[in-house]
Amino acid sequence: MKKIYDLFCKVEAFVCGVGFLSLVAVIFLSAILRGFHVSMSWNIDVALLLLPWVSFLGADCAFRKDQLVGIDLFVRKLPAKLKIVVELIVLLLTFTLLVFLVYYGIMLTVSDWGRQYGSLPISFSWAVLSLPAASLSMAITAVLKITRGFKQLKSL
Image (cartoon, rainbow, N blue to C red; front, side, top):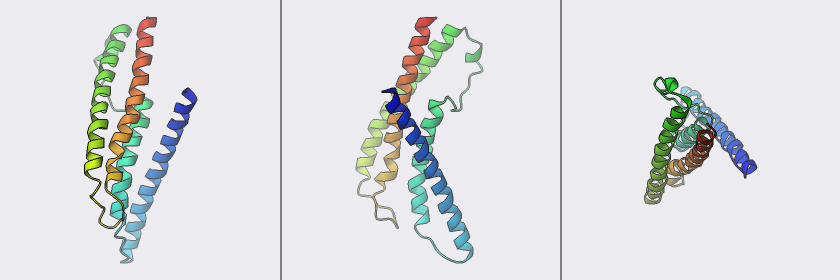
């Protein structure tokens, strides 16, 4: 199971990287072509499709590696056991929020299915789907962190 999760993490990071490079390339190409008075009407829609996927998948990659912005000024000074308890409480609250984001993100994706991009022949739901997909991925990461935290608490 660990190998499957590790492969999933690598694929997620790869997709995030390719998406980011594609986003930058589309915007850069559009800016260059605009200088030559060549219009790319689809560039905004492609950017609107890629940006949420890159942002949310990147957030999961950062969450997995403990690189999200946090305030640990208070927690840093706590004893080890209490520090783990506070981290577990935060992770449990985070997991609860992520479950809500998965549920309501799916509802939003379904309700937006009829909405289309202006210049692309696809549904706007493909961009909205990034919220529940990345939230589910982050929820899995949160469960693994919670499990690890309980093991650390037990060993102290």
